[in-house]
Image 1: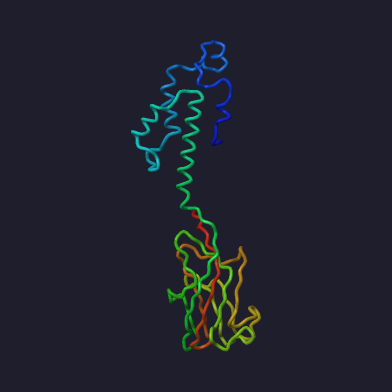
Image 2 (image 1 turned 45 degrees about the vertical axis):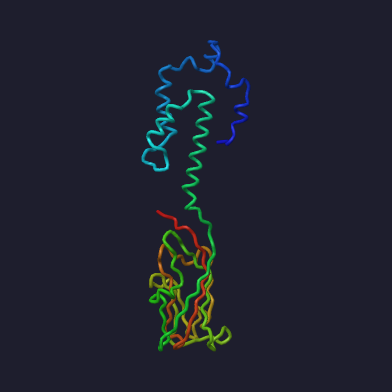
Length: 240
């Protein structure tokens, strides 16, 4: 509905003129068909219809509603103006109530690290402070890029780590959702350590409402520091 009724109220004749007693005008406006007793009843009904739900805390009290019912204008332009004003107020209340749910998608990064055991194993899911991503309740994290590196080691992209029986897993609540072999002869994933993972919008792993995304490594380099840099997008979780 328009926020301005200036054009409507500016029509001729002015609305503050005294109503005519012409029977023809009353008949054309349909006013001769209105039961005079209907006005009081309709005022109460309409006050409830455009008024307030008493169970809704954002609405006035019963006393306030009764005051409004007494002020409710009769049929005509004043009533239209009253309704327009009330709808505008309700729209403002609705907008304010929805503001706390307004959230634009943002891109964030996290860095987690840990040291492998003497047998080259690591499970960051068992180290809460080293987990990759743990979105708060109400949010979903979509993973887009992960970089797994071995800082300070001799293993580089030019000369990566490969080992017999070595493999990695990306885990959600300690259940594997992606992974790959680090055996030199493996062809499914043509990389060792370090490596970079990228995901598209549709196939991106998603972590919701406090779930834990972590990294697992078996038979990797012994006693080696491993760092995982993760890039992800935060969205509001769709409920239902």
